[in-house]
Image 1 (cartoon, rainbow, N blue to C red):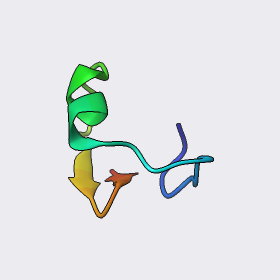
Image 2 (cartoon, one colour):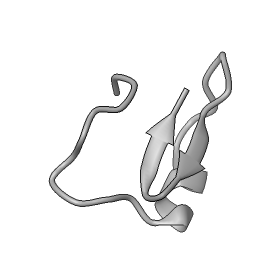
Image 3 (cartoon, one colour):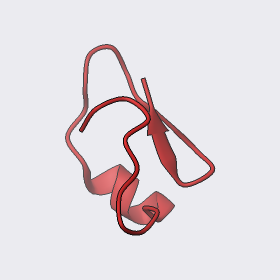
Image 4 (tube, rainbow, N blue to C red):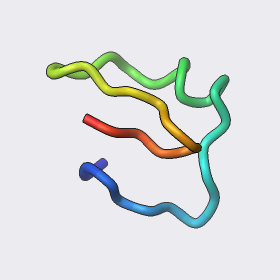
Length: 35
């Protein structure tokens, strides 16, 4: 997923935790994944 890419619905924190780890690390802020 691209940085700042909007999806049809925001992720929940639980959904974010299920995603594979990325390098550099991703952060979950306001329903969006930020790298």
